[in-house]
Image: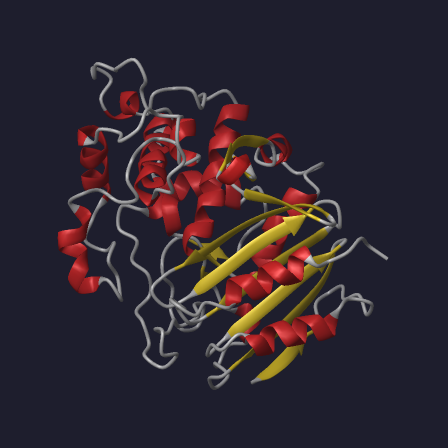
Length: 349
């Protein structure tokens, strides 16, 4: 595997480039890109086991899967900040204002924090998805079906009492926010998050080989089709260049002066703990772990043929993006390599 360095507008020669080279080389995938921002100075390295695409790897958009949920959480925080809704509102009211609500309704905040009591996916999702599981399992489950499933669902636990990761919940949140704003999902996220942050290299639908990376299955050879997320856009639709993703993380590191400053600060605030002795902390959108160099915020994601890791450390002024065009299943190494690199980044020199 070869790693081809990229020379961004600002490149700090003191950056740990050897560590990035080792990270790229450690990930066995047709295309691999690691992008590091350190106090605003960027270093990007790309490589892969496959032939180099016509468009440089670092210029392509990559499917980030569940890391898209951080965009949805930021949108919720933005709509709250501007007074258009509150996270404590029952989500069902947006779909059926006449609906009688129980004593413990599922709120918008429950949906984004995975405490709604909803399962990972609707019960009727699996029969239609089985034959497409390794390609596009979401493609034939549209938005109206997600909403109907949400209105039928009965939480398995009292909302707010337990944490259980749920694509279903975040997809439902996206539809509720769209109804609340009276704006289609793509337009809402673009107008409230993407454009204010200057993320022109980010899209919510597939493009083509001139803009999008091509995913591969677990063998690293079989090509997978572009993701069609169906009605689950809020849970996984984002595809972006590593430069846009670094810009997104840099806004979280240094929110002051950004149009979304209040929302960016809000999504760093811890909202719950879970796991053994409640050691795992979650914000509205990010997983947060304690390290020797301060708190690390991160989220990963995967589609049928691509994987991504996004993370940042405010104490060290460091942000890291890692993407690859292979869906690792039992032998995933992109996420642990990226996490280890970011967690090991010490204070600025």
